[in-house]
Length: 211
Length: 211
Image (cartoon, rainbow over all chains, first blue to last red; front, side, top):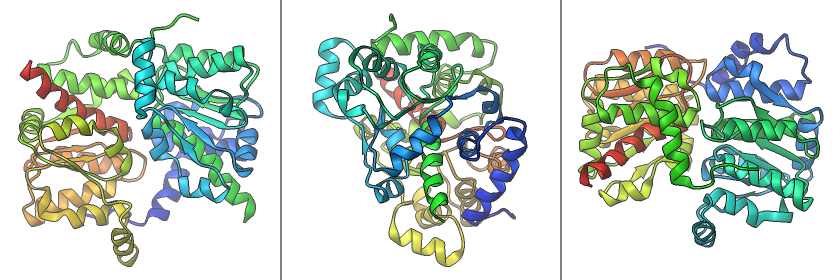
């Protein structure tokens, strides 16, 4: 059975196949990379018309990561999907507290999800960071509350939780916020590889700009 | 802002919302759980008509996991997504070698992907196991080669790689195999949370059957 086995050739061919689906959109080169990597990660070209990126989000995200900003994720799968070696080369690290026993205890006591409790616990540390949410609408709602009520200001929120309960609403609330740059997707679709793909697209842009 | 914050309530409501999309399909109760968890993980009801499960796959997968079978994954994100505590309660563990330096060296020397080299290295250990592939078509092609040419017989292959280069073909080859039970999805869609969701659905069925 014949199939392409070289990783670089697979990625190049994949990006070529995706290109026609985003050609007509008015996007910067860096934004095109974010679109392409999201579509690549989902295997789903129907993401093209539902991705929403605020005007400065990719620029701000890249600037923060280049400057060594940390990334805060809601779940371990997003952390796993982020290229941590690339991130560390700029000085950044990924934080995720969903498996922290202290967070589990707080969540249980408050009757909330662990990912909400985890985001709450980060608090002011989120200012200047990149937030990457790929699973829990409750985590995204909590970050938006921190922005609105406690003056927290992430450099960029990648908010792409998934599912039928709260995900679409939380992403709509993100897209309506005017305080923090964001990358999101309309509706119920999303997930950890999608959020990680958007972050990695920004990380890889930094390398490119150094070439 | 009002939203559901209790994890159990969120999951229950989500499954209620998905139910109408799989109602018309001729599925066992356990197969319905696999469908529901896949749709839940992708936030995408359009998975319903493209999921393909061979006649005994869910039954065989559950029997293997109940008996303490190990799980072999192509990438770390699938490992991260699997409920390892539940798996361990039956005696199983998850294996993934994509970050193993020895595998990286073999892949480079042979000009293949690391996930292909990792699957090749597992070889006969895959017999009786559950294989869960959520990213790399090359890994799935290699498992199918091991089945065809080397007599390897996993109890169940969850083969849901994603993307535009090889994914659809590798899943078609899986669905055409008559040697090993399989769970897959037609076309380009898929990914780590989708593969992990299918595995977790089977794991959770074992608990249910003990209630």
